[in-house]
Length: 315
Image (cartoon, rainbow, N blue to C red; front, side, top):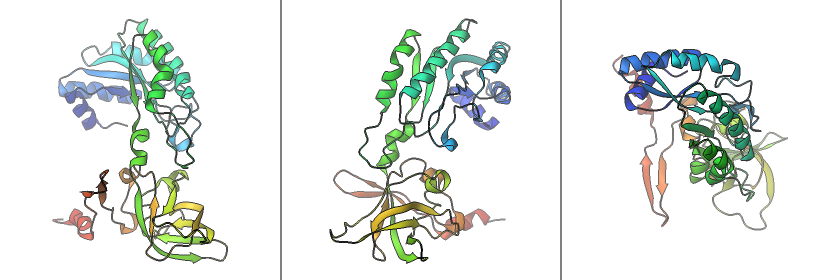
């Protein structure tokens, strides 16, 4: 679903472009002609590997909208051959999903991918790159589990990649930054509906939608430690947005907080602010950088109502 203007910019800047569909290839050809530059492309092949993650973030199985199927591979190879002035096939790409916790899944995919590359090379293409994607998860549950790191992913496919004299590309995003940020909230109040207890905070699904969207777990704790003899209860941690889906956590065992207490939602460094919205006229919050010595610097202003109104100025 890449837009033509995005493809033109990629062509102008010499960016590798993954081919995802027939119309995508046709648009890349047009972009090449507009930019006056040949585009280096990789074929995004769907290897049909189960990443064992939430279906919304599984991107390499047979039901996924992403990539091309094996039975269509020859069509794409012929199409690249038919456009020697616009396209240069330099590699193959797959992406299995997100929050993956087992590196052997990547090896299973790499075995399939190098076999595809063998077939592609047999037709005369000089393919030098394998992009195995990313998707490594983190310890969202804070259990102390030792999860694979990017180096482990590389090690599990190293021999395969070297056996074909390929350059490996990985996309380790979440595993690098997800645990570097947290969403800091204030408790608005505590209530019960007779069957369930709620901690209501000023944060919401508008700032951090992962729990609402994926039923994802985010570790939650109060900023100030509770006394050792504090009574622990089960709470749903919810925001002020007018949706029953507006929750940050369910059935969390926490001491009853005072109004105004600080509450932290951990691991907000990936797919949180980038997915934030202004639903219910919620203002996206400011962001701060905390140095190792504890000093704090603002790195992004919080939004105010006037920011929203500027979109209507001069109409």
